[in-house]
Structure formats: C-alpha cells, structure tokens
Amino acid sequence: ADQRGGVELVPLVKAPSGPSGKVPESTFDEILAQFSRRLDEVGEVDAVYLALHGAMVAEHDDDPEGLLLEMVREKVGPDVWLVASTDHHACITRRKIANADIIVGHRTQPHDPPHTGQETARALFRAIDEGIKPTVAMRKAPMITHQEQYLTRKPPMKIWFDLAREIETRPGVLTVSTYPMQPWLDVEEGGWASIVYTDDDPELADELAKELTRKVWSLREDLMVQESIPVEEAVARADAADRGVVVLSDTGDSMLGGAAGDSNIILAEMIRQQVEGTALVPLVDEPAALAAAEAGVGATVTLQLGRAADPRWGDPITATGEVLAIGDGVIASQAGFGSVDQGTSALVRIGNVLVALSRHRGWGGVHPSFWAHYGIDALDRDAIRMVVVKTASNFQYFEDVATEIIRVDTPGHTQSRVLEFDWNRLPRPAFPLDAGATLDFD
Image (cartoon, rainbow, N blue to C red; front, side, top):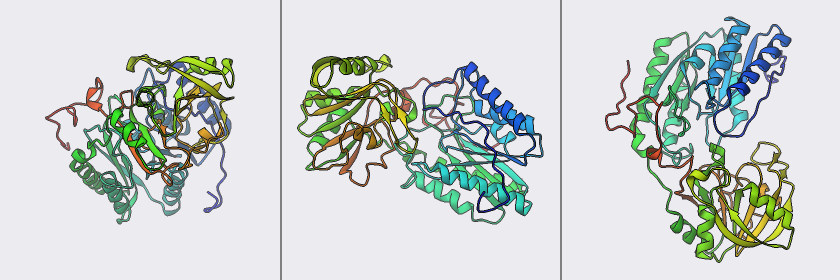
C-alpha cells in the first residue's frame, strides 16, 4: 500500500487461534457478527482484504471461511473488490472462489505470510490500476497425502510450485496458487487445488489450471514417499551422533497441525535407552506441570507423564526426576507468532533428558526461545545432543546448526499414515485411499 500510494488502510477484526479441532458454531457466529458490525462502522470502501488460513472447519460447516467471504460479499455488494490471502494448505471451495475476486496462497513451506499478503495486494492494485477483469479457474486432484513431502524447497513439491511460478510469467496471467491441502481435513470439498486468475480469459485460466493439476497428479507417488523411521531407531541414531544438535520430529504430534503436544512416545524411548547425550523434550501436560511447580526447584518428583489431553493415542508413563526450573509460561516471541502463554511450566531432569512441562499448548518447541525460557541454549552443539520438535516440517529455526533432522514415525492426529484414518467426507475415489482413483476433468 505504501509503494502504491493513495491507499487508506482501515482495520477490521483479528481473530487468531492455534491449530486445533473444529470451531464451535457459537464461536464462529460471534466472529461473523464482529466482522459484520465492523464493516457497518467502516462504511463505504473500495476493497476488502481478508488474511485467512483457509483450512478452518466448524462444527456446523466444512467451510466457515467461505461463509465469512460470502457474508462480506453480501455486505459490500458485487462492485467492491474482495480479495484474500490464505495458507496453501487451505481447502479451496466453490464458495470461496465464488465470493472472492482474487485468492492468493502461500508460495513456500515454511510459510512467509507477509510476502503472501504483499502478493495479494499487488494483484489487487494491478487489477484496479490496469483495468484487469480477473477470471478464475479451479481444478482439483482427488488426492490426500501425508505431510513429509510438503517442503517446497525440494522435489517433488518444488516441481509443482515452480511450475506455478513459471505460469505466472505467461501473457494474460494475473496470479496462480497451488494448494496441497492440509492432510487431516476430512471435508466434502477436499482435495488438492490449482487456481489460476487471468485477465478476462476463462478458457486460458482453465487450460492452465488443468496443466497444474495434471502435473501434481503425475507426482502423487513421489509425494507419498515416507521418510520417517521407527522411534527406537531414531533415538538410537540421534544418541550415537558425534555431535549435536540432532532434531527429532514428532510427526504424529505436530502442534502446528493441531495435535495436543502430549505424546510421550519419544520421551519413553529415550528413558528406556538411557540416552547418553543431553536431550530436550517439550510436553504439554497440565497435571505434571502443576505438580512439578508445586514441588519446587530441587525437589525429586515421580510423575505420570504424557497423554493428559488426548489419551486415545496411548497411556502415560511413570518417571522420576529432579525439578530444575519453574517458569511462568510466557515466552516473549516464538516462531513469528508473538508472545505465547503456556501457563505454569517446569523443567524436569530425568537422567540425561530435560523435559519441559507446560500447562497449555504453545508451539511445541519449534523455536529455540522455548528453551531459552529455561536458560538453555538449544543451539549449542557441544551441550545438546538432540531436541524434539512437535512438528513435521517447521525445522527452519534449527536448520543452521542441526547435525541431522530425523522424522520419527509416531502415531497421533497428525501421523503420516493417512491410510489409517477414517475418511467419511472426503470425495471418493481418492488417491491413495482407493485403487480406482483417476484424474478426470468434466
């Protein structure tokens, strides 16, 4: 907006949430009401820009963000520009497409939301200033894959995203977005989407959307290659490393994907193997955090650890350790999300394993500031042998020092074994769930 000039920005509503379960209907009704009231207060506008995620699901609606776009469109009318930026793990629906003039998804994983916002604004200003009439085509590949091949800096995902960037350079193309949908969404319009906006050329848009969809369909087998390894092997390999820091990715308990952060599987294996190197393990466990904090620094405590929030994936383990530190749970800045309040927290030493217990969900130790809260430099290769992160892909804050990054094949809500989930709403047949899945364009 500053680069273009002549733009007055008027804020609407910010309604953030960490990844979790379905949004209650009453909560989403309040979000809609607040947006509606604020739009009435703002009055006449030339454009509305919404920064969405796109993978939200509500108890009453598979596509609540589409419902939000629909409400805004009804409020501002057909002649006001309505654009949205989204995560590229969004589920793109017919309702989203019908109500937004332009939708732009993230270009990279790990994501760069500010860049996506800039790309969205540039597309809007270009359409306004050049008199472009955005016409869109959306095509979907009937597929769902696990998360392990989601990074965009390497094949196979890079091939698909690179093609999208190349298509954006072609004449008549305004913007292109590719959507490897979040792999745990069981929704009616699920699937991987390609959307292309052209300047008043729907035939070209559809031709290019088909080209992108054929490309990702051709990559489907490569996208299902699983790199995660059994927990016993992963812990032994990390402990045998000559030097840290080895990152252990708890794929089934990815808090950035909506899991509870209470998986104790890697922790239990570290204790069983009596690891020789210092290991850092984050664990969301309200009862254990409160008990350790009440016992105080220096106390020896015997705790039930793990599965406090989501017991369907396993049982707690019993372990005895020393309380090293107690924290207030507030971490000033982590992973670009600002401050995080994890509630009462405590650091407990169990052999060579340092377990950071927190009362509330945070960001699963994906950022070194999580450990700095306890006075620990998680990037110290000489002091730290291994660190567990509750994510399957957000390793970027450790990559510069990591000796190795090991994905661990753990069960949970975000596990890589997508064939083991119960799929009830996803359009079928779909790859890899059904042998007869094919790519057919109407």
